[in-house]
Amino acid sequence: MLTTIGFDADDTLWHNETFFRLTQDRFTTLLADHSPPDHLHDRLLAAERRNLGHYGFGVKGFTLSMIETAIEVSQGRVPASVIGEILAAGWEMLEHPVELLPHARATVTALAAEYRVVLITKGDLLDQERKLAQSGLGDLFDGVEIVSDKTPGVYSAAFARHGTGADQGVMVGNSLKSDVLPMLAAGGWGVHVPHGLTWALEQAEPPIGHRRFHEMADLSPLPDLVEKLAKHHNT
Figure: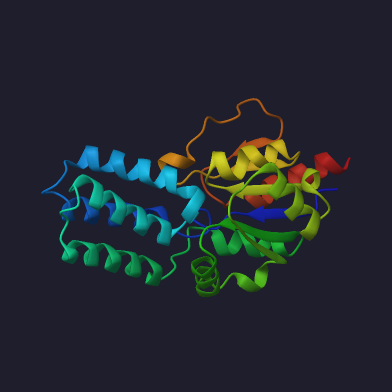
């Protein structure tokens, strides 16, 4: 039977990448005397990529990567005041109010009435806990997993802990790379709900033709899709 629905958090249930882009624009302005925007963005992305294994995903790692990039592109001459501005920008991101995406509350509420629903998100533990608490959605979830990365093994374990296995679960998220592809590899369904902004390190090609892959423009059709999948799967 289809028993368990997993949701990603950032840019699936609430806005996230928007604030990273705004902060990156601020970073570009702060470093304008030291690097043109395109070069700075490339250097920052390279720093983020090599630092993922050390800092993980989230605001803190992003802030440290901005500081590292500022030192690199300025050849160590970046003023302490600019470093202070970068730190302040990181603090603001960590304190930004949670803004739910359209249909998030109604969709989770509807599915929670019929299925086990689990939040599976990666990122900084404290920040993700803060956002979940502020979202007002916390009581709807039967389980919460804040993980360092999303892999087929992580999904297999999470859906075994909170459900009846990945093969009887659906994972819903905005990232093909993190939310859909590893869930399909674990034997489950993957539902892609694209966000207008996607971090370069989360981009991947859609698995067109995979029988357990679905895509929708927003969360509103999800309950109907899950009902159809359940009827088909349970017959």
